Picture 1 (spheres, rainbow, N blue to C red):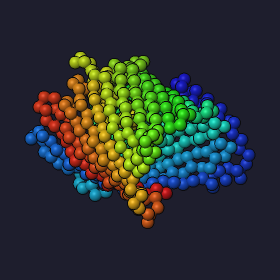
Picture 2 (picture 1 turned 30 degrees about the vertical axis):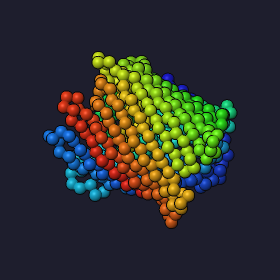
Picture 3 (picture 1 turned 120 degrees about the vertical axis):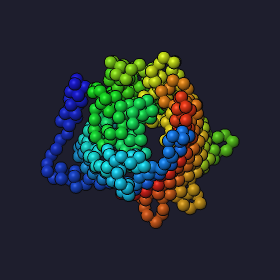
Picture 4 (picture 1 turned 60 degrees about the vertical axis):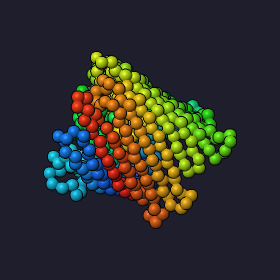
Length: 448
């Protein structure tokens, strides 16, 4: 309650310094506003492969159309407003869509229905080098993010102060109070896999499309939300360093930091090597509503850019559980969509389960030199699983590709084909039966 009062005081203080001189100025504020948006069509098909003969292989698929429409006023004396409506609507889903396992849920809302949501509704005020933004908004931070992997992204209710008074440094402080899960989270139900992959530990399937208390969403218990602070420094050429702290009241404190550096090869100026490192440290706090947490994750990435070609190799590792530990103890819990790991697959996110040693290689190329605005990527990821992680055993693997084409004949149109092939995504402890799949996605985005 004290934090909410403090937020209100800050908001009132900032807004009270705005001088509104007349209707003509207010009229201009709205008449010079900007409308933008995106139309999206998404089709997905996943063919499941079970080694357990008692389970029948099947294909689940879905089609949806939707996107968002956004309006932002022009700034008047530093003050502006913004709002955005998001919608997804399924089509060609067949009969009994709510209960049919062959309908992929990740493009849709509850009961595989379409839905619309007022996803953004915020006030923004800028004074010198400080910006306040409060209300419903889209966030993209390392451990709380939009995760826009299907039809609609995750959205937040948050109150942030952003300051750039220090040269080459951006400071952020704020309070995140509510979370509206996007459609991708519906691929998870509950449990440790969901909690480490960016979604609710209790029910990701049915919380889609509603703004709910941060704690209620994550673990089914009301909390005071998440207090966040960060610093990002870019004052050294080709170097970026950032650190974030997320204090999820009565759940855990998560510290994230990363640094990436690039340089020009002394032997060939066309070769631009780069290196990056990241770390996440989590500890339970307050009432420890999720149980004991003491997770540690680190990752590193090494690669190079040669004109339009980029390749890298990455490795990460989490600390292991003992035989008596709860699955959450040494896992990295990320219930609000943030997924910064260098080693994550397109779908497989086992790198945050306790004791996982993960590796990934990727190569991408932009074909603009040859004429078409076409980019392609190939990747392979491997997850060496430890015992007592609460979900799977043995090794999981994922390979895939990503192709994006922007035709010159239609400005702002992007056509995308993605595929992932997951092998042994889940291995049962007692029977060693495996779950694998082949998945394809066709995405059409038109921005305006």
